[in-house]
Length: 113
Image (cartoon, rainbow, N blue to C red):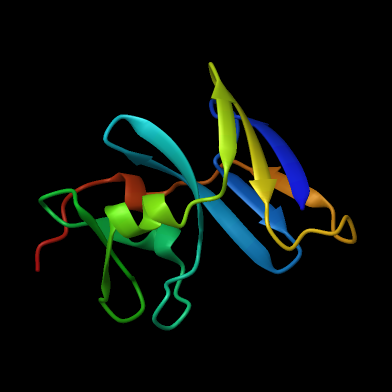
């Protein structure tokens, strides 16, 4: 297991080897979720929310993944103010952790489908 510490004001994406995670806002809470559609591996952070705000639409093929599923499968983390300490799976210390600030479309509502 690898520990990543980030400030939610400055970073919203975590890279560990070939894995990428992003901070998802849902129901007023933050969750660190794997940036990979469970269907075909599309980048969920580039998907948009459905108008009801309950699903993220994969940008590659339109699959709708519920936010409840993403919350359930999120990375264990502790939040103190804006500081997030996340416990990333499959990290054995062989890969460094990189943090980034990116535009996360999955945190915006408004897919017309």
